Image 1 (spheres, rainbow, N blue to C red):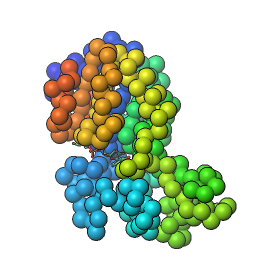
Image 2 (image 1 turned 90 degrees about the vertical axis):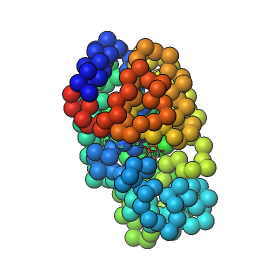
Image 3 (image 1 turned 90 degrees about the horizontal axis):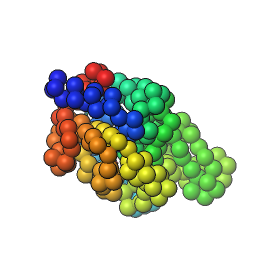
Image 4 (image 1 turned 135 degrees about the vertical axis):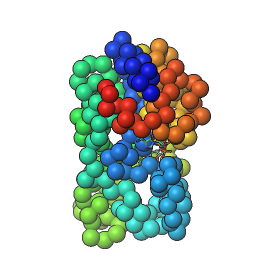
Length: 240
Ligand code: NAD
């Protein structure tokens, strides 16, 4: 591991357009479970599988059940950025990191101070009325008296601005993410099983010099990276 961390440091030193592409594993050390680890949400017992609950059809047809799960499992308003978020924020301030492309919806990169953020799957911090489009903050949604939050202006149903299964990713955000990755000289991918399409395909847009993959478990892209570290992100980032 020491050799690998040294290589990682060397590559960071010689790069000036670093992009970080991350998934749920970036936030597990902030206490937010991912989906596919052993203690992830997919391995817990629910009446319905999480993929089904977090789908557009389920949101439309079983709104109350959706919000029960959403409020119980995706409320991470009190979570704090961990060492990985903090180092990434510092790298942006130093002018080395040009963007973070994330599949996470927890807002922790923003809390850590990063500005160049591409949140592919949206954020729990943005919520809109499906009728009048009025914005509602996360507190309003998570702490609504009724299980289902309704708009304070028109009474319409509120939907979190998170991309559910069956929904398309925001085209502009995706294009911006592709642009940043394609002009980067270094891409660090961390904490993602790289199984969620189309986000996982972003790796193919990278044309730069150094591709690094840091993930606790191995992924099908391990062979593709110049440097693969199968460790916890915190264990790696604490050396940076
Ligand atoms: P995933 O659950 O499929 O994969 C997470 C990966 O991270 C796993 O391979 C696991 O081995 C690894 N991992 C876990 N903890 C780690 C750590 N400390 N250090 C290094 N690696 C670690 O997650 P995904 O690939 O991001 O895709 C799942 C979807 O889940 C995404 O669409 C995302 O929107 C959503 N999600 C988001 C959050 C969040 O916002 N924090 C949490 C759960 C799920």
